[in-house]
Length: 115
Image 1 (cartoon, rainbow, N blue to C red):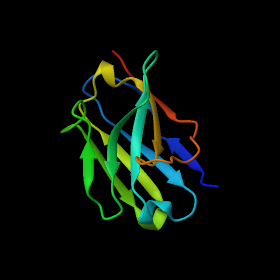
Image 2 (cartoon, one colour):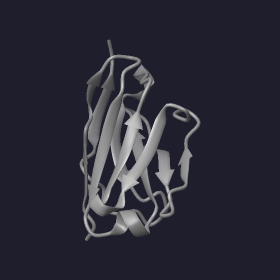
Image 3 (cartoon, rainbow, N blue to C red):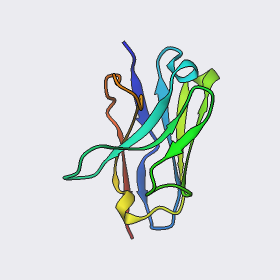
């Protein structure tokens, strides 16, 4: 069973940066597409960034130009570099496949953007 462990969240001021990490079991990072989702209180979980096995990336309009998804196949790890953070980026962030069926969800990592 695939295990996903997210880390790197925290409290940051508006305009700040954070880098999230997602460590995956097995070799799914190198052979499958991966994505970062987020879920804010009272809202549905949304996909904000995805990276294909070959490295092509896609972003939600709300984060395009501010977030960058990348991966290290050797470490089976996917990253999300988040710059110019806004209060509306506050959410629990998860990694998973951007395609159905998804893997079992990890615990996520909390990102709070506040002054």
